[in-house]
Image (cartoon, rainbow, N blue to C red):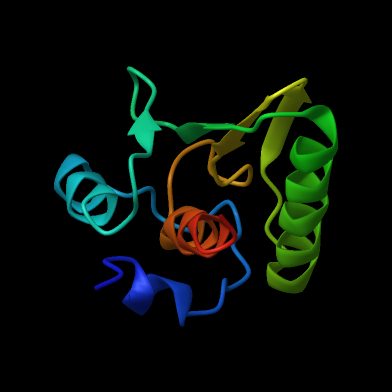
Length: 112
């Protein structure tokens, strides 16, 4: 059973500076619905490192993330190189976490 199925069926909604940040309990609850994502110490972003056996596969993955991000109108920060892709997600408008971050993470998990 794919634990992120429910989140991956949702659509990101536009946020503003008035969108409330998730509290600790909401963050922990939503982390349990995605696969091996972590938060930074301040609980302001989630991140995950994906590994690959060559650069081409990494770049293909990054491009797939790009397609999803454009469709969701929610864009992660991505760092990549030979064999790895680090994806960091947060809601820029609130400098914290919203449900959109977990929806996007869930959809990214479904790529690989």
